[in-house]
Length: 122
Image 1 (cartoon, rainbow, N blue to C red):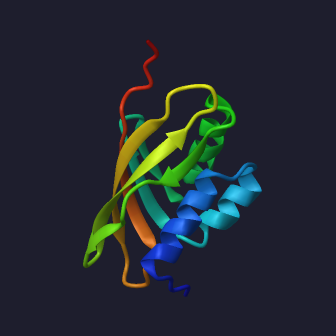
Image 2: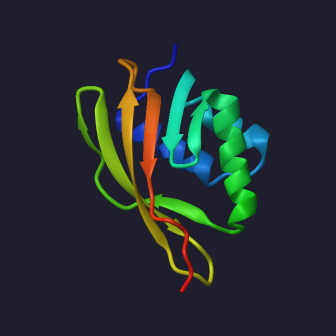
């Protein structure tokens, strides 16, 4: 069983969001989320590495050229915490969001609940 410190886990998670291709995304997710991982957003609830990889790949196609970066400290207590992220969109306004996470005792993500503003254009 793999064991990560929290910073390593979060780095793999952001690397997955910034990667392209299902195989690459899946390989990165396998380093930072559990097989029964749950991702909860206003779009729905998604479970496991394969569904998460598909969500990331879909986002790649919906927002071409976008990238994500951590834009806060990782605040955690025991097995839960939060971080803020920024989605950088070429030639557009960037978006700031917040994730609440849960990890297991090996420092691997078991759940992320994402909060983000609606993608509105003015």
